[in-house]
Image 1 (cartoon, rainbow, N blue to C red):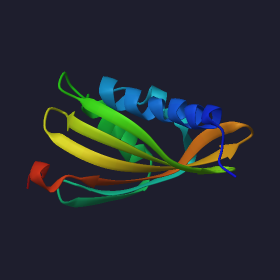
Image 2: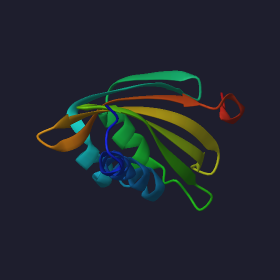
Image 3: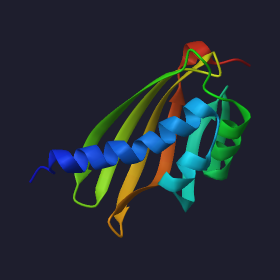
Image 4: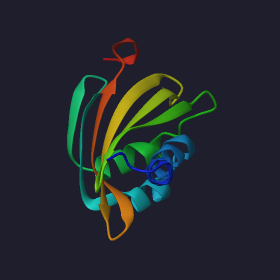
Length: 127
């Protein structure tokens, strides 16, 4: 059975914490979304990032989205206590485009992210 539109809105609202952090260069919003033991996987400028979500917080706190930053949230699927969200980012730090996938679980009535995997668009990679 498909989840209600209200549940999709709740997942989108939770994912907005991710977008706010990236846009503002302030990890405090994302810390509300991610669990303490959330993991991160992806390549940033050709170098593999993997492990603790703390690396994402460091990146966000170091580089703000910037004036040209844009983002779009797509709630791909919800299956009772599991949700998959795709976030498209353009112009992070004035130059990088990403596609992020966030894996969320509904825990104690709240949508929390347990994993983030991302792709940096190849035309924005610098060596």
